[in-house]
Image 1 (tube, rainbow, N blue to C red):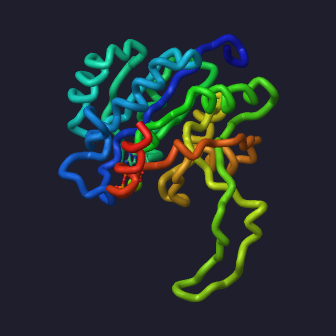
Image 2: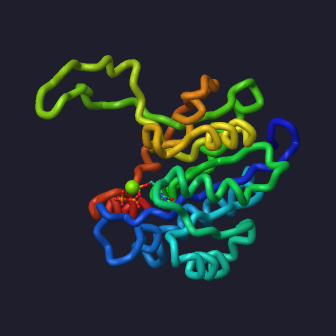
Length: 229
Ligand code: CTP
Ligand code: MG
């Protein structure tokens, strides 16, 4: 099931405020269909054959509603619910502290990407037993991408060598712990965890992502994801 027999733990980063969504509650509790958005990725992780235990980084003050939601869903794999931090990286760091010492693999997933396909979980875990420290699902970029300074184009990048990274991202537990420990928020703010492993020279593999893993940022994204449910 995992590289050296230890378990696979999932960290669900759900602590963001959802400012761009503009709801009166955190994004994890915005409505998606009949339930809070958080219900969908939580249920899918709980039902995954690969995942043994789950730690949720909740919006501070929303730990209790997260626990109640997990109970309502019968999500028995939830090991703990902790208040998240000021940034995504801080939330993941706090959640990682709750992951068992003997965990072999940690998956880090954004609650804002509710439609998590089981085959993506399989694709990201497999390479960890082939010498990779981290695995990232990603999609090709359809648009032409330009580097800009203010409103001036500096250069046009080679799209063929670029991909758009998604979550869940899979890590050897030891690699993620090391990367998180050596990163301070004073350095460049990390929008994903794999970049911290890359920064230390770790081998990060990219595998095919999935369009359904769209990240809910704006109200239009929420409508689109709801229409795919
Ligand atoms: N996240 C987190 N802790 C934070 C900030 C973000 O756990 N302090 C999580 C979010 O809950 C989300 C994921 O990281 O699942 C990606 O972040 P993003 O899409 O930016 O969500 P928000 O930060 O909530 O949205 P916004 O930036 O619009 O406020
Ligand atoms: Mg954010």
